[in-house]
Length: 185
Image 1 (tube, rainbow, N blue to C red):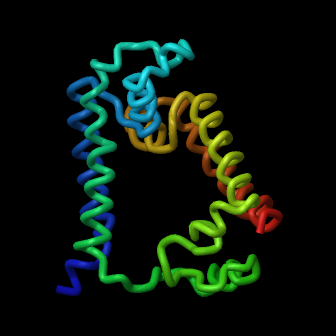
Image 2: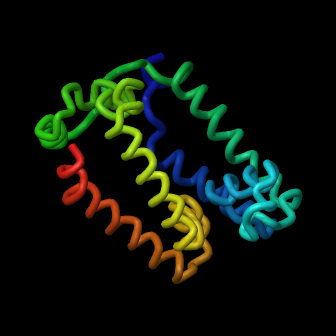
């Protein structure tokens, strides 16, 4: 039973992702979470306020299965495939996080210092959420897609703009981790 609750190894999950990409490429479809969010906004009527959301969302509704799959898959993973054990973090990462004020790094999936309601609804927490949301939204729009779209679909299609975007995502992540996160916490 314990083996069932372990994360899938790369040699299982990687080929499954590749198989999905082969089917998407074969059928002329693309994958990315930001396109799903754009479709949801269009369904909700955002096209009345912005040209970006004025498109034939009905042609993209098949892509909403990604959102549904993420929700259902997350539920199944947490409730049926997880044993609730601590996250296996590198000891140096735990030390670095403790220096930033994270008390129980690795003991839960979501650190209370960020995701606890009292912290998320504080002025600092709300400011982080608003600024981060703006930066993610702006970055996604500016890059022409999200990390999953560029890293999975774009790279599998050998698109140079996706390679440049993915390099930019990693550089941005390194800057955030090593320069900005210590200033925030």
